[in-house]
Image 1 (tube, rainbow, N blue to C red):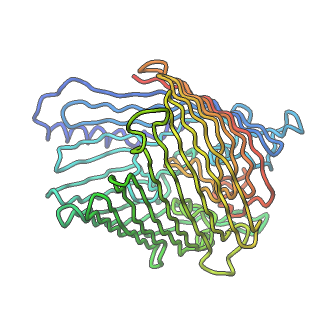
Image 2: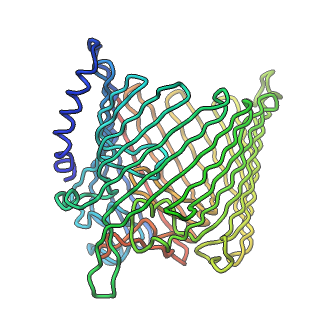
Image 3: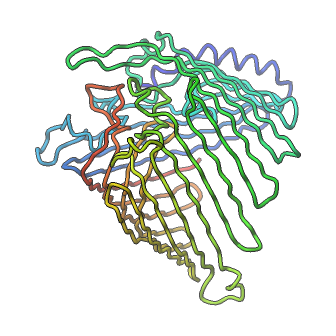
Length: 496
């Protein structure tokens, strides 16, 4: 298991780091302070003649000791109770059925009990200077988890400088620890944040170099080629807040010498009008085929798409000022949104890389007694696939003092899901979901939650799932037939 083997090389550096920081800390130690949470989760998935039962337990700990030290741990244990079983062939594990298989299944094909350490580090912070040692995922470096050292300094209130380096942490289960550490892999990065114009303008620069062991597929029947890839990621961000109701910014990034992406935004809230707005623009220049010969840490943020652009506008208006005198209604909101998505090249347009315009109108009403209701209507005009799509949905919610119940449905033309652990990377198109959610906060320490859902997906990406034979090669095709899934998720959490 990873928890037993993946931290041994960090013991000596950790001890040296602790000793150095102790010498730099002349103050006496205050009382020990810690926050911890253990969450146990059971998940049942069914669909496409497959059934999957998984058991998880997540552990979070934040421990403050001495005056400037913090230790943080975020990990989880997972057990696949039955693998992916074809319900039409009772008792047989369906090796070719990947409808319910994700990255954890691909890198742990024998379904053994596994423990993943998402982050585990010791932090030393004296305000103007700080250091961090361990497993960490730094902000704004595109899923760049690493085992190593991060240093930062703030010589002025308006300036922060940081740099880090170490071994890249692979998203999956490290089954061969000696192979992982013997490989000639490393990752280094640096960045700076500058607050200018009376802290109204933020300029951020990021640079990352990743040397990573990857695999390239060969001819059928031939062994895959293993080699070291090198990638450079650079990024510049400008964010401007001239007045409280306006925030605007732009982010431009390069992968090597080539443009990778461009994002810009304008959003804010006009309090006198009880109006919130947001305008977003996104463009991806790189085709996933450019790096599809390997699955690196840079593959996941591209999704299963060719170069594309996306524009969205969202408006929310509250009418709560009309109900200030009391009465049955507490609040009423009107939501309007528009989204346009298209490939940059007409030749890239397909059912796997769609072009559409989505219009949405919704209303949210809350009344006395903790009741609220959301209703929405989506109209999607697509090009080349189901030209007109209509969807109606909403949510009914009731809140008590310690209990909350939600019943509703959602609809999304395109959903890209990922998390910092990289165990979830999924694209889905034209997905309708019906769900029920219950949450019970028993006391300040213990809570329970349940979610049951049924989902119909017209298209579902295979970007984040693999079979057992090809562990590191990404798949960029999509299912071309509608898929129906049922999911049941039960969680219990305890805080210390």
